[in-house]
Length: 230
Ligand code: CTP
Ligand code: MG
Image (spheres, rainbow, N blue to C red):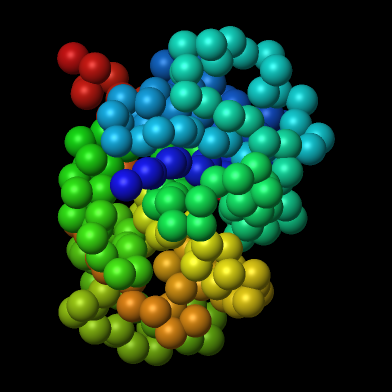
């Protein structure tokens, strides 16, 4: 079984309010994405780690990535996350990567990933007919907002999970489903598979595996990485 990681890293990080895209912001002395790559590089089951950056990226070349020996960089980012992933998959396919390889799509913006969680996911899903995603059960009570932010109602949280990454699917079906289902409703890989009628599996993730979206998340990620380095 071959498995590779694909990191969409072509976003602009608009919610971070920073001129530098968040994946290149300093996090404990390294660019944020360096930590994401280090986590994936520590997963022995991953044969390759492929990063998709923007064609206009001005930051990637400013750092030394030579520590990551299984790394490939593709300058084929798209206008949305789903397009960046699809472009990366198509480039891999054109380069001869087999359609039944497992691809673990992981947000560059999730730097606190535990490598053991990825090995566990690969072991659990390696024989699965479709694949699946890391996710965590929703912990907070959910409110539906009505007019003027008045509570319209409480939404039952039973059975609700928050999707994380990695999301692990086979290269061929994932590319086909993303291409066929492309649209604003496709906010992760699993949603494209679901739209095509497949039933992906939920695998327990971790609250540490946060996505850096807002400035406060960067502070949290810094604390998590420092605590785990001790
Ligand atoms: N991403 C990408 N190509 C895009 C948009 C996003 O590769 N056109 C990547 C981001 O770089 C990030 C991951 O997808 O690693 C998750 O997306 P998100 O957190 O939404 O990042 P941004 O789109 O950069 O941030 P924002 O939505 O705040 O602009
Ligand atoms: Mg975004």
